[in-house]
Image (cartoon, rainbow, N blue to C red; front, side, top):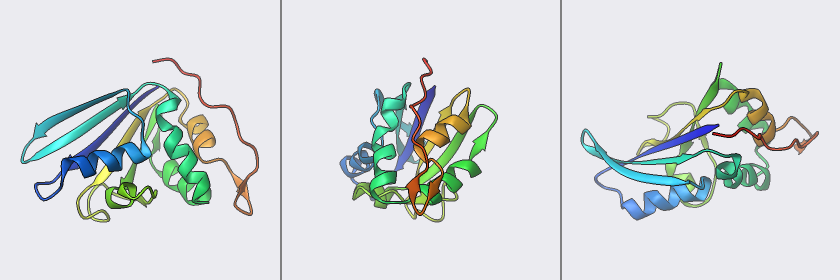
Amino acid sequence: MKITVRVEVRPTENIEKVRKALYNVFEPEKLEEKIEEDYRVLIAEGNYYKSLLKLHSLLRTQFILDAAREYLKRGMYDKGLVFYLNKQAAYVGVVSFCSFEYGESPLGAIVFHVETENPRRLIDWLAPRTINGRPIREIEPPSEDP
């Protein structure tokens, strides 16, 4: 599994606040700052499910597994998935999904790209099916090595 998370830092934003938003939802193994066009960009990487444990936990404490599952399924493709989180919400420790990278999150979204052999299994672990908002069955985390 390879997880790459990208977030733009706009000129009006404090980079430490953007970094905090990122760390509230993701635990990177590596974090770089780059300049792309007119913006600084934070690029975080992780290779194991442990980098997604904060997100896994927040989805449960906020009781948004059903909504999360739908957003994750929309971004699924053959060997991975892409999804977007609102940067301002992440700053305060809240998960709010966006449908697009730009538009719903005025300062740009936090963009997750996850490459995995079995994206459906990853979705089943992050956001399992529920009955009355409670997981029907929790599964073990994906065990893919990088």
